[in-house]
Image 1 (cartoon, rainbow, N blue to C red):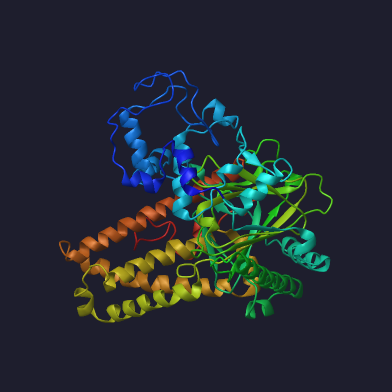
Image 2: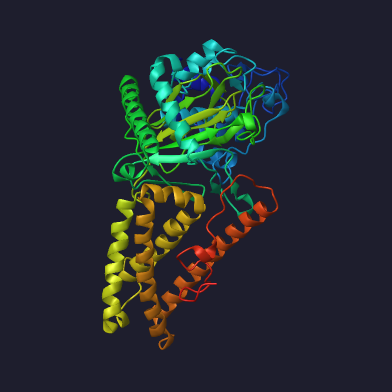
Length: 560
């Protein structure tokens, strides 16, 4: 690793290091000297200093103006990081900077990009292998195209990403056992497309791959406005399942224990903190042989299409490790790849790393906080099992239901005491807040989300006798809160100017807005399926069959 002071001089074009620059005063006042032939106004004929990232940014114009020099100096002292990031990043946190033709070919990078990368690398504690970058700088690297550079990058900017090939990850018999388990789940219909909505209603659609979540009893995983209810891999649910499904779920749990042990070993070897207490796995069924899973443009020139575009995994505990295990054909002609890139960074080349049958990769500790990854199609079918430490506060039934039960108990007391109901005061942290929040969570975060997965999903879950029973408990709690709000409606009708009446009107508006959004989601899916645009999907449960008042625009009104 090169000396930081020398590295900063090289990147920032300053004759002093960051520490040295902080001690000096800006004496130039616009008279920054240059070794070119120009004098002070940037008209020199020199070609500009060549740095390890390409041009120094002066483009042969000699000296900079005093204003630009002072701005660069502020950046070198760390005062301009926020401004630089704001200019480069949109509201979604992704880089919106435009590349020149030269940059797209992998050529020179501007000083502003290099400066930003340096600041981020220093702030995040990431080693910065600038001395390893060749000229012209490649946009991405593979182990075959740039073996030494990939090795250097994996030890520095991509430290925390670990890959085990299939031959060394597990014994062949273990690969066969886990492969058989996933085939059983597929044969029984557990893999399905999820309807997800990344943004506006126009973006609603099925996932490119079929998937199932398996995990600890009570776990759910929410992504892109869809909550997925984990198939339990242990407990009484397995006793209710048939022998083949129970055996497959038990094997997935065994795989999870293997991933935990391996993740811990890699964390210890790297000296990196972070949890590997994986509580669920998202298993993808990527059948590219039939055309499924090839809907994304290729992220790397010359390689396959993307199954999932660039992303960071969400709903995870901070600093937790992610472990991925894949099973493909042993004799595939083109391997699958995992792509890696550093966020907010257009200097460090992206990596495209091949994965063989049985390969594992781990993103240790805080790697997911500072990097994105993408999966690139190979030539064969692929199962991937992504093991995660998902947050439990809002995603585990046993963490959520006690809070909802407390709200129901308070609702029952208020229903029995008209005096207490009249004394109910809507203020932050009050009983009213608890009642409103619980009702919204019940209907829109859990009950509707469960029925959104459709009749086939419900039938499969009923065979395990786990989630249908708990959803029935949620629906009962929802009905008890609804009974209270009907009493509130009667009370506020005679007291329209009260604070409670205003708060109740606000709740009704929230409910009406959310119900309309769900109605629009269902209508969008129904229209696409009817038109034949989406095939092979399981429609959400029809509103009329759902136990809650899906069609009611009013909180206490009748259903459609």
